[in-house]
Image 1 (cartoon, rainbow, N blue to C red):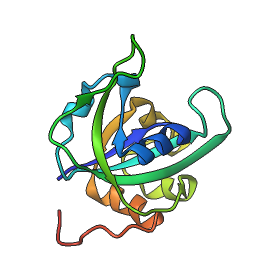
Image 2 (cartoon, rainbow, N blue to C red; image 1 turned 60 degrees about the vertical axis):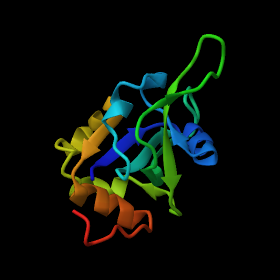
Image 3 (cartoon, rainbow, N blue to C red; image 1 turned 180 degrees about the vertical axis):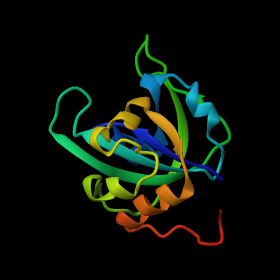
Amino acid sequence: MQYWINTISRAHVLTGVGGGFTQADHGRDTRLRQLRRGDWLVFYSPRTEFRGGEPLQAFTAMGQIADDAPYQVEMTLTFHPGRRAVTFVASREAPIQPLIPGLSFIEDKQRWGFPFRRGLFRVERADFAQIAAAMGVALDPAVT
């Protein structure tokens, strides 16, 4: 089992929660192929909307990958994004600021936003567990 962060606006996260899916990399499925059924995924939303919106800087949803491979949907004639099915869990939004000092994947605490520019990326279980606790989600302690 692996642990992932996907950087997406809150509006897009909410669309995914409503539909039980995630997208990444503006619809490309390249990194989505790295996810495996049962992997945990948390969403970090720097803003409320994709283009513009208000600054948010919070973790906004969490779930587990529920399929075995990316699938494609047709949103428009020219946009067919790759998606992964996600089973979302009940959680609350958690601002990132209080978590920054304890997250090991943020090496430069002054430029803490840099890792999130990667979009979808893997993190260690300990980091994910800190985020999950802040969101009110208890990870199974028996799973490593």
